[in-house]
Image (tube, rainbow over all chains, first blue to last red; front, side, top):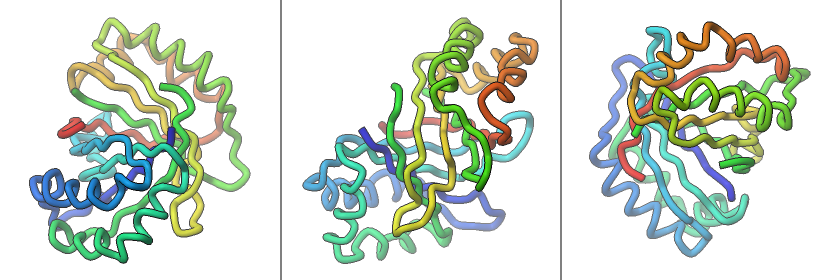
Length: 104
Length: 104
């Protein structure tokens, strides 16, 4: 299994509409990614960095895929529809990581 | 549900023993954290950052807890045993994030 983490940095003054992200944006993700092996999604709301530190990321969207290539193939096939939706919920630029799930 | 992500930055020349981390270190995590509401663990190996970029993190260890406080309470009760094991598998300093699982 493979996991794509889309991480939105926790920056002071930035805008992030978590309700929109969890509903409209994730519906769009499923619509465009299901044919490319999307297995499940998970949305995380950053609470802290531990030890009284702020959370590094205000929100993380996790997408589990059957293959390492599914996410990039689905994104290309969507013709930029997912990327174009980002300004509807945030002015942050996300950091992405594609990982192999080694143990779970 | 709450999720603690322990993220090891992908730095050139750094040392990371994934086999040790997945076995010895994760056994130690479960030993010290189970009494504090640890539900499950997941280890991710960073493959890429998408679009030909390197992965931001070489490895991410995810710990799912029943409460937001479980991880820090377990860490305190372990008397530093988990932190003391870090040099046995890496010379990297991890970044931590405690999140609420909003949707899954």
